[in-house]
Image: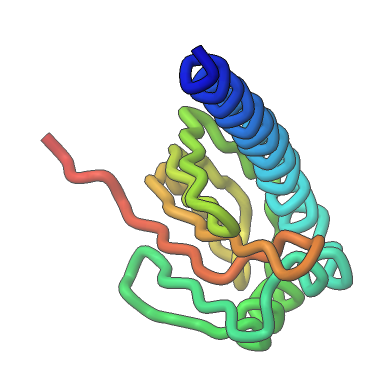
Amino acid sequence: MRAWIFSTLVLCLLGCFAIRGVAQEKSDAASIRALESKWADAYKQREIATLSSLLGEDYVITVEDGSTYGKVGFISHSSGPLRVDIAEMSDLKIRMHGNIAVVTGAYHERGESGGKAYDYHDRFTDVWMKNTAEWQLIASHYSLPASN
């Protein structure tokens, strides 16, 4: 009888930890969703200080043509002759892996760069990492969807 009570107690405790873990994961996913929105808004509004705070020091982005930029290169590009009229994400899927979040989705951006209009419809992957209590974007990859 004691073994049964002990087993039941252990299972209840494990269940409590599992529920707490799921709740934390949902909370982190909600935080990541909000950060993705903040990231797109800061880029569109050219809020360089906000962009800088969201990006990890070793951040790297790969853009549609295969070029890669670090944090400083991306921020320089964002503060250059660029006007972003639309920066919107859709079809977001967030996968949590402890202190790492992988976000995939669709991205639409329209604006003007160097006097030339552009209109991109991309797919993207963002990787966020939680350092102590703060999430930072550490990698992004944007690509044009294959044409049918």
